[in-house]
Image 1 (cartoon, helix red, strand yellow):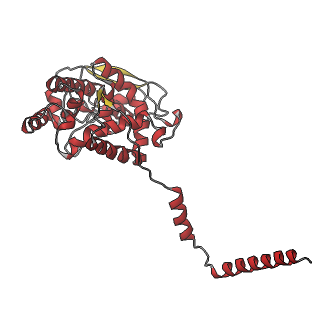
Image 2: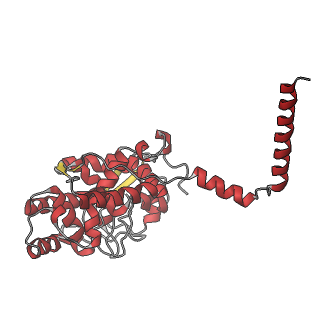
Image 3: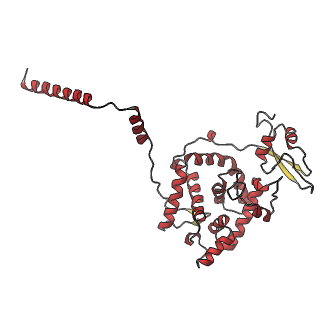
Length: 312
């Protein structure tokens, strides 16, 4: 055997011996340690780049201002990493934006205001802690002021079409008062009086981005902007889905009613559905009957035959 061969053999023996010693000395990795290592390697949180430019309803956002960038960054982070809520909103948007978008156009509002409804209610007929209700979160007094019926039997704040019409009227009045859609959106949250008070108190121009406001209103426009950015670019922010994953609009027709209905469950049966389905499509009906002493015209939405497999 040559000298080089002997040296090579010795080297191999030394390396194998070293590995065996290390294997004996090294403690086995526990399942818990492997689990922690996997969690660290598989889950990562990243900073989110701020878009180079943004606008709300065609009005530019001053992203060269460091305060504005930080406030937008906060809402982008919060709403990107609240993944379950974000994905549910996108699923609902496919169902409800086709109703809201043409109504905004009809009443002269920029399309961006659909994201205000997202910020208010996440596209659900729910109630806020303050008692604001429906997709657009109107308080009782505001709803009545703008012509919505609100009582124990009928609450038209939960009627998406009527509430969208009222929201448009409110926002257009605010735009006329303050001169910008951004300020109109802020006034939707804080009220026209609340915004005007701060403009006067701070001796400021009618510019939302220059005002010092309460925490909710100071975040409000940025929440709307974050929803606009994320929902407009879902894959960029890690949301992955196919068309079949989204909630689909349900075809319906309207039935005009101008008398009282003594029993809504029986009324529903006439159309092959049950009371639950009737209420899903008409959440503004607040009881099991409809008082209508004045003979007012109501339009009750009924799903087309076959949409739901069973009615009773």
